Length: 113
Image 1 (cartoon, rainbow, N blue to C red):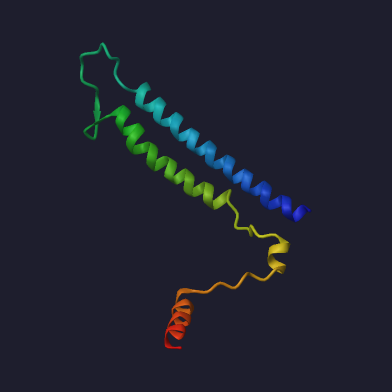
Image 2: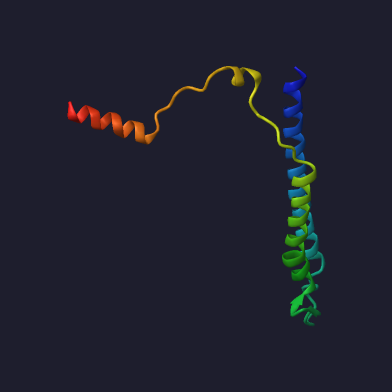
């Protein structure tokens, strides 16, 4: 019983981490895109960094790079490689299926008879 709950628990843990990272990215993008943008009544041009406004640089350049690195770290340290098959799946032989070359051969044999 314990072997079946560990993969189930790990899958839920991985899903929660992925959802948390996606929500974190959305919050990051929303906060930097709207939080650092100039006020609508402001007529002055925003200050530029490498030719881009700060809100754009943070939300569309820094954010994706940062969260791509966080995703890579999440995959490396949180995700685990485990089998999704149960003991019953391992004990039962897989059903035999014909691949395309076997199907073509059987059709050619029927045509020659």
